[in-house]
Length: 125
Image (cartoon, rainbow, N blue to C red; front, side, top):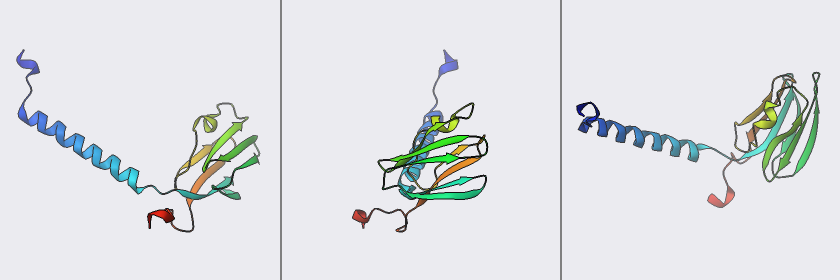
């Protein structure tokens, strides 16, 4: 039974780690900014920039195949791709500055960039 005895220092260490993890999660959540545009590049070259506040559908033709990017409700997602693994489709939606979707077989990168106001909500000012 002594093997499972909890010491005071163990409890303090666990509490400190939980507080640190909570503070880090809060910092990361408050630090993200809504994106303003989506930049689409194929093979390192920018082929399109689209605003996130307008619904759109963009077929992307790459040397290795085709993708379909869809923007709805302020978020972008890869609707379809004809690559073998379709990991880019499984990545889900992106909406915050710095997030990206990557399709390696087609060399397609979709990145959310901050809006002209720095990503802050005008109502929060």
